[in-house]
Length: 163
Image 1 (cartoon, one colour):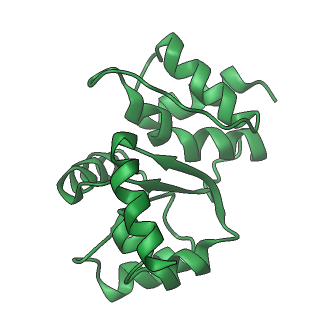
Image 2: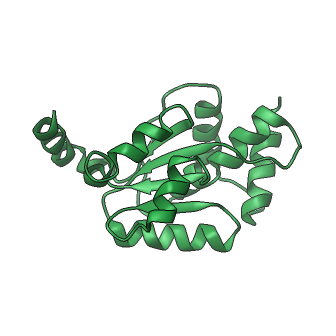
């Protein structure tokens, strides 16, 4: 399967016409199974690389059939930014949810069943109140993205507290 064709299909789904070269390289890398670290300044388009993920991975798996069953986990430190991204994505037809303090019982159950393509959560929610959802999703998650990775040092302290 042609990765560029899959990227173009994802761009179409999201209403974009083009992708920057650095974004394309990131998507090509994770579609080919490589781990990727993207370091780029604010407003350089990092979010598109994971917004497009479910569409690209599904196109790569299923071809041109309009089937989106991939679940991607996005670990993000700020609830307000997760909500903003979720709203934008939902307007574009992406099934996205934020797992956090305001998640409804229905959304949590649907997330556990893999009904969302992008699942946003914080490390605290992922390893706290939403651990059962994470465990239920374990075999459905195709990719994990960590946004705002500069927070990792703080998160590591949190992870060691729960282990």
